[in-house]
Image 1 (cartoon, one colour):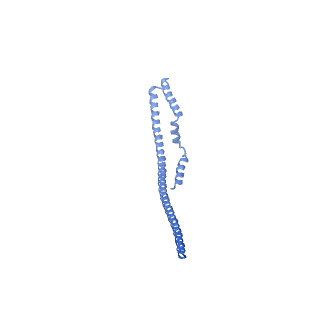
Image 2 (tube, rainbow, N blue to C red; image 1 turned 180 degrees about the vertical axis):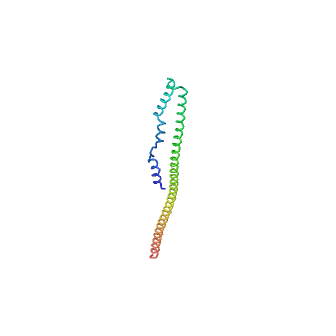
Image 3 (cartoon, rainbow, N blue to C red; image 1 turned 45 degrees about the horizontal axis):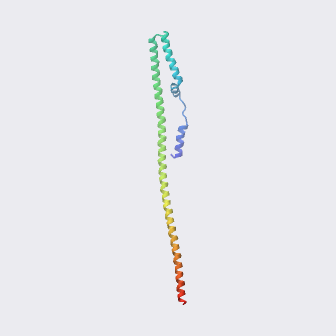
Length: 162
């Protein structure tokens, strides 16, 4: 997968919200202030009924502990469902991260290849510059030698004509 594909896959996972299930709504509500208020009112009502002698204390405690136990069982099931969903979600994110890491490793390899090619081009350019400089020096030396030979020939001609 290429980097743009990976980025698209990662953004699609993050950008595409899952539909909220009934279980998730219940879990969210149980963790809300409204739930806290309702539970507080319910507990106060249980104790108020017993305190006002509308129900016997033994009956109130029996019903209250049964309700609280059942609620705890269901809450633990809801929590486990939530944990399982989070585990699946984390597994998907982990796979995306692994894919991105592979892409980064591929990019690092490409960067190393590009660096090597740049070094080769730099070396070639340096060699070409050195070759050009050598040719320039040869040309200058040849011109100097040509002038010197012409000067010598002119001097020889001058000596011959005397």
